[in-house]
Image (tube, rainbow, N blue to C red; front, side):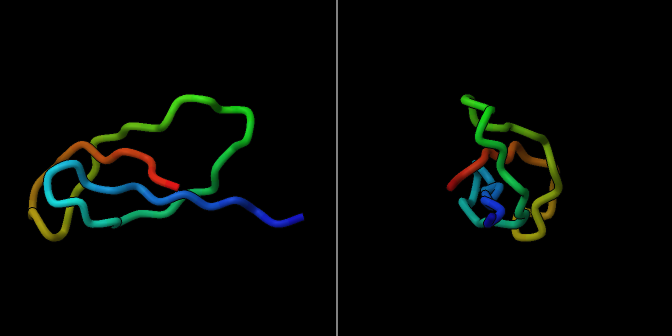
Length: 49
């Protein structure tokens, strides 16, 4: 069985900095404050597929 992956994209610049394993049971998309190396600050990252 293949593992489904999703990326976390910065809401400011749109770069996809982090990847996570996605769960099929979760319906809403993950939102986490993480460090963006392009913006050089802590920004909100949203899950993309």
